[in-house]
Length: 150
Image 1: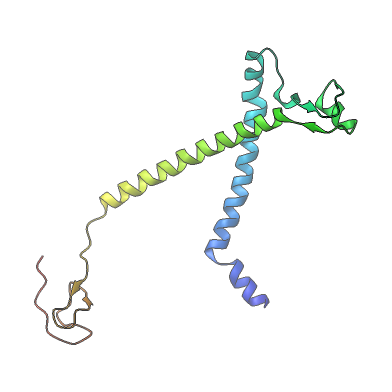
Image 2 (image 1 turned 60 degrees about the horizontal axis):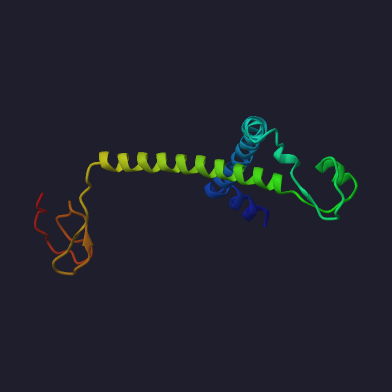
């Protein structure tokens, strides 16, 4: 069982997935820091000094001086400011992933254009199975084939 587990873990797909998750978590931390520390302060200043991380609705009807004070008092709150920041995080991550995938698709398309056209297999006129374009005999029925036009 340990040997099977080791083979499973060492497959390329599992390792690629693990690397992707680790890089994604690190990237998410960078984007969250960008939103919280760089993007939101100027937006807060433009909106009259609003601190989005401190926007909440207290469900118990008591007005607290901050979200931290409401949470310390055990008040149920709807933290819509944190939700707005999470949406901005998501949109930035989605935009960056879109731009990366777009570039990868452009590189793939350019690579496919550069690749020379490889001859495709042809059909044996006798047995109707696929045969390599270079073959002079069909490997299936051993019939002699005419030279491929090229």
